[in-house]
Length: 443
Image 1 (cartoon, rainbow, N blue to C red):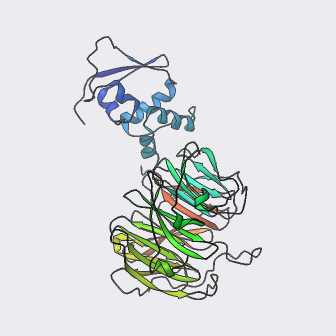
Image 2 (image 1 turned 180 degrees about the vertical axis):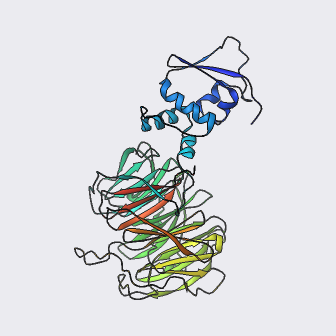
Image 3 (image 1 turned 90 degrees about the vertical axis):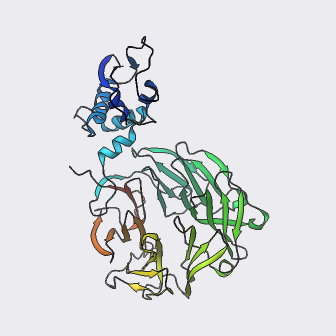
């Protein structure tokens, strides 16, 4: 930033405020104040402009101006907190409010910010998909609809798939969501939606080779590629489809070994540093492979283990989630009992179990006769997160020792959770509970 450029007079809703161009410079390039000053954040040379009029509430502007002056957010008792967020959004300084409200998410210092309730499953069976965006938004799949919440945790227009159950969700940026469903891709079963409006932007196209396939697990790369596991129910064939995120056109698919013999992928993860795609399937054969998409070859794999039942929780080699950790060049797996194992990607796939306590079992749904909630994994800012039943455990350090646990008193077992935009969102089995966790700013 430059040096102070003089005083600026603002008339906000009839009340006069005086500040400096330097203070307004803190608001950033995308703020409303940027248009009031020249490219060097100086007052415009037009001497006829003695003050800038802004037709907004002066009480709320005063709160935000003090935020720019001090870096701290103080909201008086007579000021509505949600309206402060709305005004900050108008002025283009919502990022400043976020930074003043909470720190980067730290699993060792979580605070329950809010529990969202009041909606239920509609238009089809239960989907267990939740995905957080990099700016603190969240989308949740329930049956054939997707609920979208912005940073202020206000619900945006829902995405409705006309009675086709959602299979998976994926943010490709802060404004757009890819949704896959049980409908065939060539019939419109995978689309790109606007997060703010819920409107369909386009349906992903397929070549003749993928006609009759449905899309499942999703992942995006740093070079605008979208990957999806694809299954043809009539022949039980499985491939990985590749699309251009910008145009929605299919640009390829992976069907050679090991995909030719791979089961339907349960998880896809793009590794940004190595430019590889991790593909993991859990039933009926457990497989994990890393695939170099650029050179069209497999670079690492773990031999598959056949599972006669996906609910055989006694077998240690059968696991329910997997995540690659590029920082340590390893893959972490979680079995049915939340025991964690690690595999060095420079090795042969031998599992090094770090947590061998087998005393806790996942929630058993007597109504359906199976384990309806199973362990899930996430990695964020050097911390590893694992859920089992209604509790999330945090692991830290080079040896991944458990350093904290947190849970909410209601909501039941956790279906799924996701971390993004300095928040952790957890979706509970009681379908009307979505917990939002943050890390309070240290004072």
